Image 1 (spheres, rainbow, N blue to C red):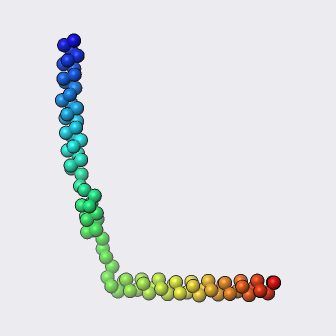
Image 2 (cartoon, helix red, strand yellow):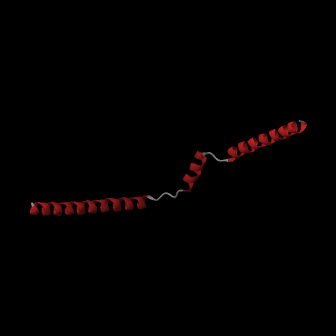
Image 3 (spheres, rainbow, N blue to C red):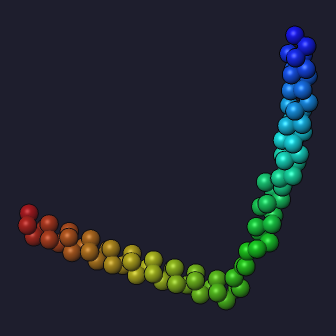
Length: 84
């Protein structure tokens, strides 16, 4: 019976130590927002000229694709009108 008491007493400090270690690990982790702030510092933002060139390219390509789709639509419409 004395052995059971000693075993139980020995087990409790180990659990407390494990809880302390887990709590210490949680406090060592940086918070989410600190991580986000660190990552934002690593971003290299493009300069104004690069943004203007990329914007012009997107607008130009969109206009060309829109015209191409309109042309194909007109040809398909003419084809259906011819068949009917």
